[in-house]
Length: 380
Image (cartoon, rainbow, N blue to C red; front, side, top):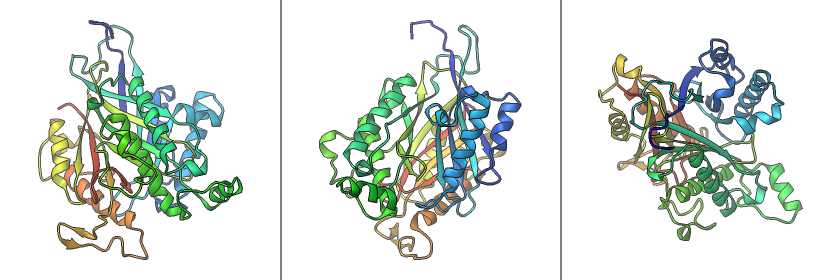
């Protein structure tokens, strides 16, 4: 951007509830009331009330309903919608977590038209990119790492985030393996990273996270290999969040950061939780955004929080600060479901609301038992 040139792009962040996985009425209402135009939307995060596992089709249901809504409002074929809007549906609203959508949009202001936060202070910037579809045998392996890293770089360029240090959170929606996909690969005489469909979610999330770390310069290529994915957890990103789902075969990438080339009153800050009860990490991120009112944000500050995004992972040690946990030993309820409920409670207790985006499964996303988090806020 030339010196003195007006900043014209502003990131919009809107959080709305959903009554059930097929309910997109609150998103439609945003369009009907003129809060945001369908063409301005670049991404939608969603927390749906399924189990978050391989057979969680609440994610796919929400995506299909959103595709229908956008096709109608944009006047385009349904199959074109995923190339225009990244849709990251994360299953699992255990504990007190509330199902909701987080709508991200980019508004273009006329050159020279002032808008909120139009000073030289950096503002929230957002960019999206998509990888190609993967073959089943590529999921959870270096092909996915490289393709994800390339997509992250493209999304950064789209968002005018020239310095990786300005990136605060990268969300990826990635594919998983099903029995059908494994059989198809075997039919072409290819093996897959795992025959366990649930374990494939972790490998896919891990490959995506390492791709993010590579793009952001957190890790170098010489330490990442097929053998390290899903195994060497000393390798991790402090800004990566990946969610696997059955509803796609590619990776959808959303990059969020602060850029002096954007306008608006929203900013983003991040930190890393080192275990499931690391609330100080959340308070550090909130303080970096200008909000600090422990043990819980008051009503005024709470109104300034547009979104909270975080990862949740049961510690593989089976302990949290020396005390035993049973998240990985419960045969009735999957460990990631326990972790989402735990971290969701910690975060909600601090910010004072329950519609927070807590994604389970943090392979290579933060240290063992912890995970990255980010807060998007309006400047106080």
